[in-house]
Image (cartoon, rainbow, N blue to C red):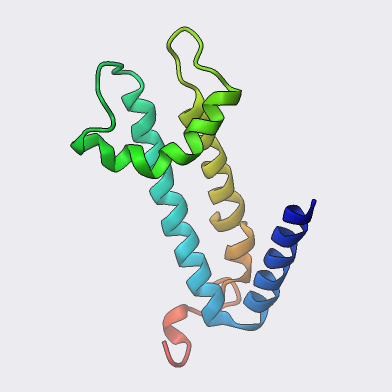
Length: 129
């Protein structure tokens, strides 16, 4: 419960700072969009790679997609074991990241609503940008 409280407190601080600082809100929005979109692409490639079981994902061309995602896929496979050769772990995480991207950075997302673009301005119009 302490971890959940710490995460909640951190998010509360983040959202309160974003509501008072438009530049910070814009930076957080851009970072979140880039991070979530990047991981969605990584998990999508991992889903495609599951269709080719003979491919060693630890080797060079595929290692770019293997190592950034394996730290979350491995524990997920312990809970949702591959059934009949179908690994559902990348699908679960792609769905989770897609949901997070929509809830945070989508048109009606939390970060989008605190961004200065919604308030009638643009990030380029802000001073010191």
